[in-house]
View 1 (cartoon, rainbow, N blue to C red):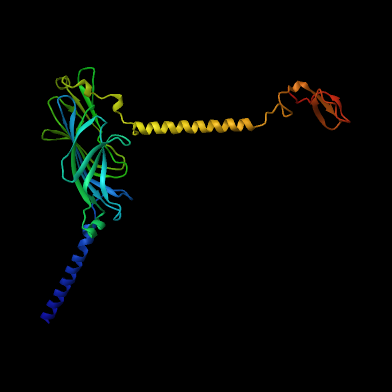
View 2: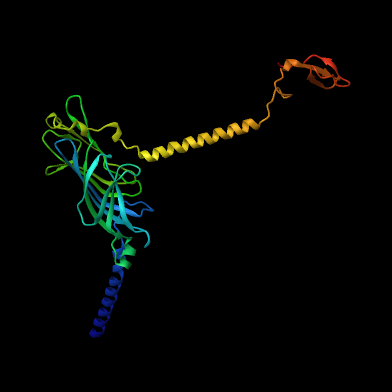
Length: 316
């Protein structure tokens, strides 16, 4: 009896173990993306932006991103992304992880760093079947200029908004700014030598914004050529796009004008409903006792009609 019970327990344990092993691929395919919205194909677990100011008022900005693909088939792989930059005054783009095969500045619709990955990334279920990966951690830095404005008292302000994402969510967003004596900021915390802003989860289209005021002792050494100008505010359209938009509008307006002129040239030229270029006072009114009509003074009166006064409601 005891042996039979032990055998049954061993069989039950084996069944449970097999079930657990079969469930492993499915569990591996699940993605922890609690803030992703319905229909999202990607999710950013962590987005950390670190700003290290230089003495001339420019800054080295490091972007550290943990990106996760959460949906799509074998053809919907991730091979590159665009990360928004502060403005077009950027140089020294430097990849800092081997997951990046190419890093270039892009002005397509704004100011971006185009990050090309060393490999493709798939949705978890596809990656599980083809031996690929579904998440990528990449880090790069840029040397950014035109970030500050000067105040009348000699201090300088930094108003910085890292690039945001209109079509996906971020699990955790943090901005770090190297601190120096006299800096005044709206930070939420400190981490060693860095002011920190912890924004937490960010939904579609949400952006983080930080403010830092630099004292005169630092601002006095800033390069005037590195100061922000009105040209640094990206409109969301590059120059080529604006030119194309304006040209299209001009073409549409010209086409409408041509159509109006063509229609007008073919329309009859009415003159009071009785002819062209005739003054209403050049008519005679006639009646046959039932109907009242008018005819040109030079025309003979109709048979059976005689002259009469204009109708009371008539206005020349």
